[in-house]
Image (cartoon, rainbow, N blue to C red; front, side, top):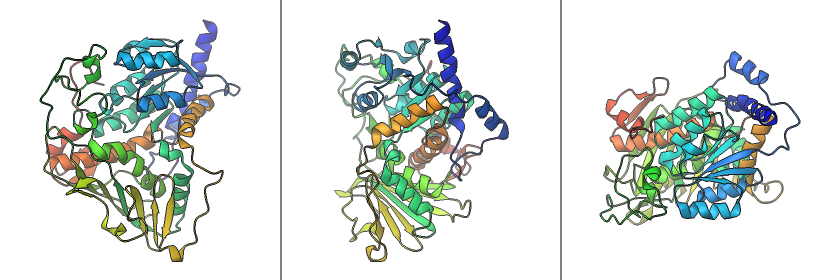
Length: 448
């Protein structure tokens, strides 16, 4: 027991640096007291090879991939609201204890860290509970389903000094790193305009009309968690929940954190000043088939103001994309990021990028070491940060800023009016009605 307690203290101390940030305008300035506290609490050396005891919340689909990528540690607890999914995971990890309710799993005293891979609407309640119980957290994107959940997750991680990582696995690619360095280093000159597009489209005609019995293997009440009570439908579970505001945020919430990560990183973007969106008529329940969101970011640190436009989905049978790519070498890209600088342009996908016009720039060399086997590296960065007392690159301070920006786009669309955003006061100063889409509403018993 003494060894277990010492090990727990050892791992808890490693979380002290979780709030340390990478610098630049996107990142919160840490106080001198916080820095001293992080230095005092750094994890001792010599434990880098010791395996962590992990609890896993969510075990199927994307969650199964996350589980595989951390499987080199000790998987001591598995949690899923679907008995079939849970049983399949147990076959791979027979020594792990099984739970239906993550709250019961967090009562264990032997967990060092937790991986949260649930649908969006339960990210925050699970991650915050894990953080408050003293565990380090890896959470799939986006952080929470609303702006306020993203803010709260970052605050709690900072308060408890845990090592955190949001599941934006593309952040770990050599390509993203090279693009961030190139754009931030001025290869295309000062950038005032960015266009980000994704093909993803999630929508529904309205609420499901057929409600068969809940499968015996599914705990529907636990799946709903903090969401308002409603009848079960197979249209929600297990895969189509992104099409409803109650559970997700459509294409923007799904891919915004992946693609908008790159301009935030490369340009050190912080909170936008204004957000304005257009799309099909707003449905109170279902997310839109397409969306365009225009963000304006202030000048910062010698960087000029930046206008960033997001596009996703399908309108009138055509993919919604920036007109700037029409007829060019990236016109057939389903998704990507286009930086427009004073000296030229840079277009990037997940694993490749091109400088434009091509005649003015030499072809970029291939990434060092061949391909981009990115996903294990992203998970391993989090694990190593826990063991070394460092901070992961997509910790909740960095990722919280990104997730807030993403969710503000949905809020602007739903309220139907341009938002003038004050991040310090956490409000749309011009539109009190936007608050209902910014602040989260929880079912009784689930508020964080």
